[in-house]
Length: 529
Image 1: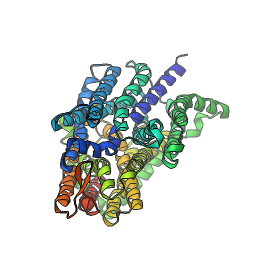
Image 2: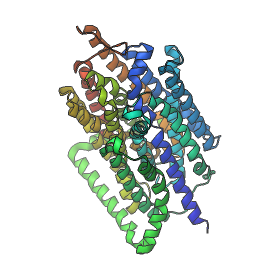
Image 3: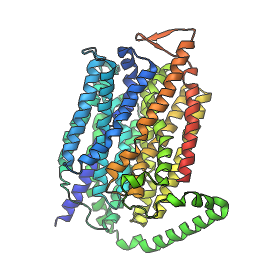
Image 4: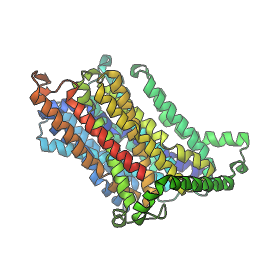
């Protein structure tokens, strides 16, 4: 009697996490107003990079949300995250409007508060997905996290709709950053409260029904991303986007169940035992081939401190002593973090190449490609959801293999940027970096729960992403120092909004070279993982 209600609850909770992710990826639109922030504060490029780093630095406090979730209801943490963002972005808007005057240190604190808000929202979504979909948490996580990549495109659409004559005021993004996550949190709080501490997945056989529902939701997500990516913003309809984000996801479980009943889908069609045995056979064969080819030496190198059982719970002290963790940490540090720093610098990159008017479009390309990268990361899980519903070594090795392949475009993209500064090259490279970094961001949470246990994901994953503020500081300062050096060595002085800027390909060329080399190192670490 209560089974349909329980099923409906878990899907509404997943949809609530989609809403939160879709409207809280506010760090994606930092390039849209960063040049104005730089002008108002009269700061250098290095100092501006410190502000973008402050947003990433908020991730160092992400573990607090994981800890608080052990003692407080989820709804309380959601509202706390919303008010942190409202405070951080609201005061930044007043600062850019010159309605208030703040020292540089206070601007740093505001960016820190905003970054902390993003991390707390993410942690809530991670915990809800793992809790309500214990057998299919990677699928729920990938789907939810992927919508974070659409934030810039959604904000661009809303900013266009509310602007006069299509002239977007870049400060509009700060107002949206302050209010939209708060409004979304209030809307999402009602389905989230339905979880009430209960595990909503009732039976292993639900995996079969979940597989079809997830497939439908992923198709719906892909349609949403394609619509936002390929249609010009002025021609897009907010009403249609609302249908794609709110109405259709809520109705999809009932639609899928009705469709299955109409076509009499039987359990016997899944043939789980045969697929599992075949999976084990192919895994043994592939392992044997790798060893014959000489890759067995890596087993001897890292076997001593490698984890033996996937999904086993590990304390933080044990986690940091494992070589798996450090390979994972370095891989993320040298790839996903670079992608995030690149997106934070897109405003200045577009400006230096003479494409300031295209900044919003380029940011949308990065954001939307990040969205598709996150969706692609779920393919191994979607396949195994049909054929092998329980977490196993095959699924983990497939995911890490896909992760390694997804990182290949990143050094290629920086190579393209190094040799060409054309608009088409910038768009292509930005898309490739978006796909790679998006894949990393999405796959990271699932890999964390598989390597180090799902119960402590809220804390363990926040321990992993401490590499983001560290990388933001290192890579951001590197780019800022090179940028400011070219300003000092330039014979032509260019002022934009009262701030001295660097113009030309040389402003970031050396930085692209460094970032490309570092991403290759991250690719090697992912290969060993």
